[in-house]
Image (cartoon, rainbow, N blue to C red):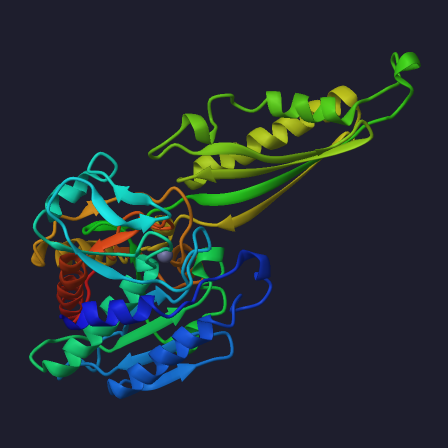
Length: 414
Ligand SMILES: [Zn+2]
């Protein structure tokens, strides 16, 4: 069994699921400490330096640069220790299936066979005759992101064992609560000490992402004038109608259900209220700053029109930025993209650049000043009991990481 597979099988059996209902605490679940402590001990056994663990279950460590690479900027690699709350995450029983084609059978649960068909995941045909790791169908596999953790750990072990492999100082961070949106928030970037970094948290081999949405949210509050409806003529103002009027002014086709690729949207997420007052919560998403500005302006215009029609104060609008598109913040660090693509090619993997229609840990870190695109783990069907990862994908991702760190074993030109 390869080192990365052995690690992966072991790590997924440590339950470290996060809990959105306890998001005000980090980690949101005490069990994430179990995974953090395990990694802390293994990093020390591996001979890493500056191995740290904190009360929030963040683990950081460094592997010193190879010979003659001391002067190069440290490269960061990041994965998250929590697993998704979307499906059961305790008591994961990983098993290796030798896949012969057709439906991939994860397990049988209460007499029902849990399967993934090639129609659902066309890539399955790439793995005919190969070994695939699945759960037994009752739980997540937690390849998201134990695969990333195992791949980074296996990389460190390989660099440690083979002195012919060149690399700058490698800084690693294993973070909690990514799945509930808090993975990066408490990572101390000074202590982490990387100049640039990658998260290893994507899916199929070759997938690479450095663009994500700019994100803002908006709260629209309307004020009505409640009056007996029987005698309400020219007196009654209905806050719900105002909200309706506001919404009707936004572009009708720019909604999640009508957009994909690089298109942004306005998404009405929540509405509540009655005649007297009402409010709506929107999220705004756009890949470009100008596009985001246009969306904000459309909301301001809609609010202003209603205030002109019904009186100042009828609508109040509050817009707040959440996160930014990473791609707009790399500045001259184009080599972060080039090196990732080249590392994939050198490992025999055709890279596929995919814009993320959401946010990532990396987006938050990039916003805080640590440029951080996202590399693939090789897994499929994340957040589901049908999650799986081919053994070769685990191994080839480690090969790709070896190529990547070698590309950083020289000064970077922007
Ligand atoms: Zn993940």
